[in-house]
Length: 392
Image 1: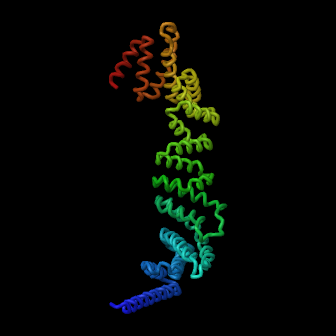
Image 2: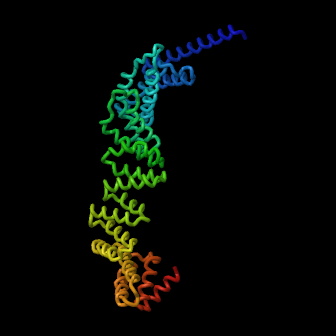
Image 3: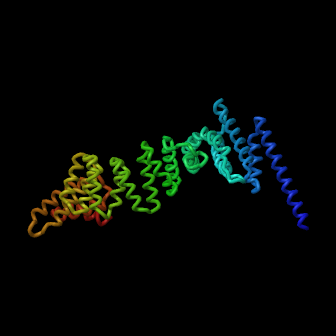
């Protein structure tokens, strides 16, 4: 085929393509004017965009956006008139509106042949989208209730993402109260999806939602833990503990993180007791740490404080009994024979009470009572415990 024939063929094909494009655009406009079949108008435009040659045609995106706006108005009217309307479909329309408008604005921002950028459409499109934007938040809330956290995250992220979109240049979202709440729900949805990286994406903004800040810190901490970033996990626990010392989440996990650092664990317990000196949890935690630090007399003091206020707390009796046993074992058996016997006598009622309150914890109370009864020469009780130990 000659070069001239090739040129003619290409020109003919381009003419046919333009003709088909004009026909479909014309059909779509007819649908829009008719007041019905807006979905068909949309399909005509999306079909055109399957051809890469059409993907920079701003007019196609304009008509596509108009067709979806018409669908939105139609669906919204059904809600207003209390007619049956698919809620999920309605929110899907909202998402499409923003997806199309962002792409249209991107084309609108391109310079013309002279290098000039006019933004012919930005002002009007941005104004329209601001009118729809609240339904992005509502869509996210809808999918949270449905338990579809992937879709919920997508809606909340689109809502938040408006602040960085060029389309909304000139709009100030910094003082928008719902922005922080949207970030919280995006964080929550990501956490429920077990997607720690996504859960951390909007953490700073989510923390601005003071009503849910404690929960946000928990999701952040769990996300760092899932990512095996121990330093950030502990730092977040500290942040949460400092702000919410009475939370049942931060304190226990912070104590666990210092399992091998009892001195630091004691600092945490002391700080907690500054917030509430009568807390069952805080008092007991300090007795445990002191026991690990081999400060047995101090540990006993805190165990007794717990028992005095909370006499049904089994582990406090175990800690007290263990403290007495350890004090006895530290004494010189020759020089302090009477004192040692006294310590075992003091330990016995605590450990026996622990046995009563926690009968299934034989692995803990049986060896302790075995040692106590042996040192006090209580044959009958010793024989009973000996049998129990042999059957463990």
